[in-house]
Image (cartoon, rainbow, N blue to C red; front, side, top):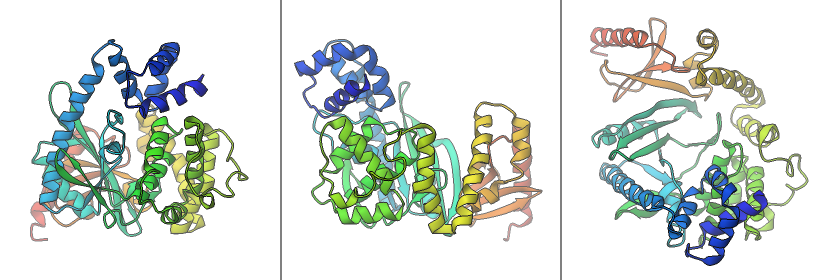
Length: 424
């Protein structure tokens, strides 16, 4: 059935006329199965738009209203970052949706940004707090090539029905648990506008690089990825040689080959990608295998994670990271399901926060109210690692299982430390 559903959704996403009789006729024939598949593939908005033209509801109009409110607030964020000279770039989201044909809407969740360094990250937090944003996900950070990388989530409620969520990456963009997209995204940035405010977005090559890198962390390709790739490939200034070099440097060439295969399958058309970018992959292991499940995981280890980490840290450390990920995955699974938490707390001592941080497996930072801000540093206080930053203090944690009482005790220890070393 998906052989019919996905091509229909692909056509629907790129057809401006949602009153097209052939679309409505095909939709009525498949509608029982369509919404579930559309939701899984981040393509529900075009379905809502089509149904609204059929007079079924006004959900699409409400989505448009919410998006307008989110764009207005995001423009405020961009304006305050621009005015204060923060080095950032907006990826996916609005950076992508402006490529869609008129009356074709890209489904979005949060608004994604990357700042160039940890120093810019602290500045960003200070600025967006003045607009009323708070943490949705506290920062998670690691060290890569001597620089801090990480990610955090923020939100602000707009009204009773919607809010704006920001996901901010530090230094680069995470592709998976231990691999990060690196490069001078800012030096090659282009500019778009959101509500009249200029916003930097990636170059044509980096947009495809980010799309491919993001797919590493997903179990399957989504139809929205194929639509995005189709539109990105139309960029008049796209340099395929440059893109090829960046994909190879990040060991993403196999992932890109499979993404192109998927795009051609659902679109029913050949891509305009030069042959040199796709040569040799059809004979490789897993190139024609299932794109999800255990085969996908093994493919990503063989073609991406292990060679990527071997390039940066050597083969031994690359294999060690694979072993540590098994440990991390199991403990994360238990934590999310609130199972075996005492065992998790015992086992996290085997691989504590600072060791995770140094090995690029992200350590979580829990903000606490006390402590005098200062230069970024990791500090051990009474057997617990804490992090001092220019905007305040955080407790470093593997899985965020500290109790309220423990956090209050650590907070008091931080306050005492700052009082003792006030001249530090």
